[in-house]
Length: 161
Image 1 (cartoon, rainbow, N blue to C red):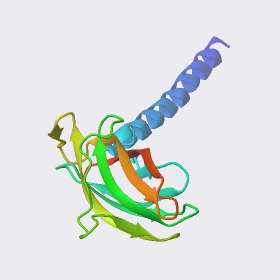
Image 2 (cartoon, rainbow, N blue to C red):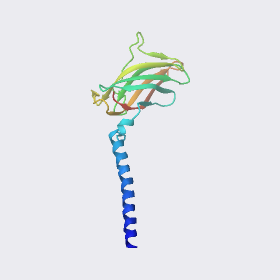
Image 3 (cartoon, rainbow, N blue to C red):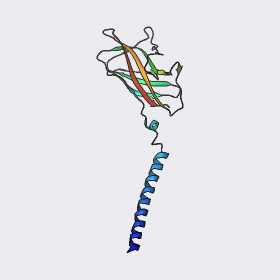
Image 4 (spheres, rainbow, N blue to C red):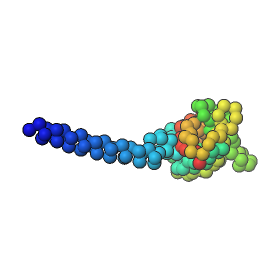
């Protein structure tokens, strides 16, 4: 009778040993695929207040962000400046080069693609490709009908390419 209890205990340990080994192999495979690195699943996105959105975003390792801005406000707007910073400021704003007014007129539903340099403090941002990026996109515009100025600041995230 004692023999059967020992055999049962050994079978129990062996069965659970194989199960634990399978779990360890699966975890090792997931680790080797870089699944546990949050930067590997960080999507490139731009989150702006209502009325403006980004249809595409890519951020290079030298800090240049390429953005396609979609305008969905209630009136046409004139884009007057844009900037990208690691903190939520309106420093280092760039004026679009569009003589003679240096503004971009955007109709309702229109879009505009531009490249903007992101800054970390007083210097241009740069990092190793693959590094996660989290910053802010600032956009200045005026409403075409009223001339009322607006400043909007949104989040810009992505993995540097």
